[in-house]
Image (cartoon, rainbow, N blue to C red; front, side, top):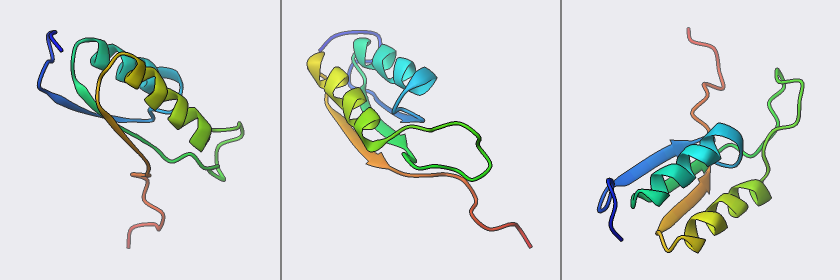
Length: 84
């Protein structure tokens, strides 16, 4: 694959849908291999539905359709306990 980001790896958080997905796809189109991360779970303080595992899999399928390698996993970078 050729492109501005050929032979580079991009880590994208929130990649299951919305801006995260659009960034992952844009980076992939430029040739980057993508590591796509998303929590894919509800968050008690968020009043709307969040992404699902199926959303993250759709992102990976769209990246793969462009013949770019990708890895995906459910992950969260949120702090689950308050600091002491």
